[in-house]
Length: 198
Image 1 (cartoon, rainbow, N blue to C red):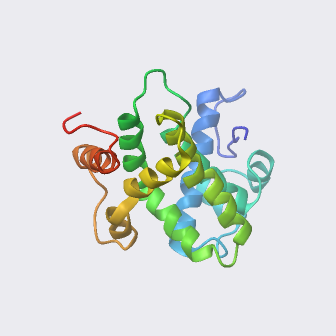
Image 2: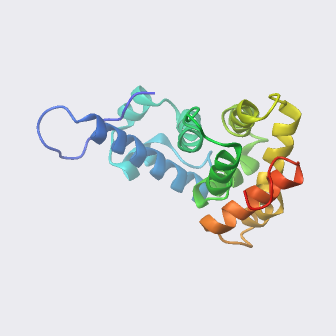
């Protein structure tokens, strides 16, 4: 996915890489906000472009159609959480980042939206699962002793757990850093993957 160019007035010359990245974030922020408020089918690329102050053509050129924009939001969240193997990263550190990311307002909004839209957009639901939950499970597998996918899937489920359901229902706020850490460490202990206090 390449960066997005803005149609709003700006300084002369080509935008810097940082400016292009910021414009892409602006498009994805606008899209996620609109999708969360009204649903995927009720938001047009024109509306996303207007909200983000870019041209419709720019979105189609650099991201794609409405479903591609949604998936780009899912990928952005995933890439912020599991940007690749960090040298020396522990299973506990990755687990904490997953709890923080997937219990965030952004992730909860995307998850709610996908639940609502999955029936109407089954291919999008499949891609959401591949780019979201399945990618997190693969990242966990890479850090598990023996690279066990079943254990990674069980850990991922525990990292969501009942607190995630309460978040989806709007019954709980996002966890702070201490709560996310406690949640992740308890999930690890439940599977015999972490010692108390570690």
